[in-house]
Length: 172
Image 1 (tube, one colour):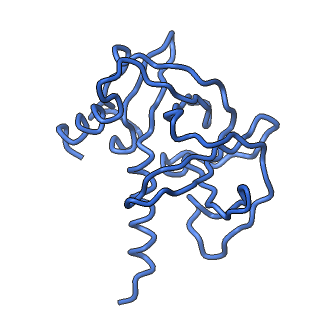
Image 2: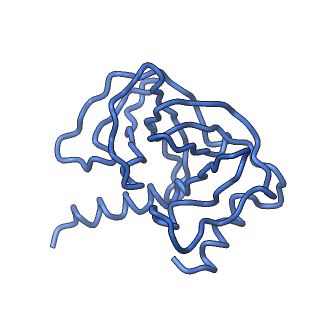
């Protein structure tokens, strides 16, 4: 992804707002934040059904209010190792617009922290050099206190995973 495209994604998340309302959570010791507006619910762990032949990123489904929704482990998109669930593990159900369709997705987390606001002035686009993660999977990085909070680009993550899955299953 080029520098101009990264800055466009960065600008899109903030719009004209000076603060962004987010839900913060942990994955493998890193703090992430997603826009609070896309969060539908925070759930304790639920029984999940493994989907044979599925990719590890979204390898199971859960029943959410009578609907079957995919359960994603976005740490795999970032190249992190999957971890065992703990007493603090939660599922964050989000609704994203993917290909002009409202899509419910569950995201595994190690721990949900808080709903808070992040100031635009403390944020910046992801660096183009030195990142261990794909820069297009990150909208921005926000410095708060002595830590960095990663705001992932969920649309890019799920669109890329959806495109890759449909390409892999397309007949020749």
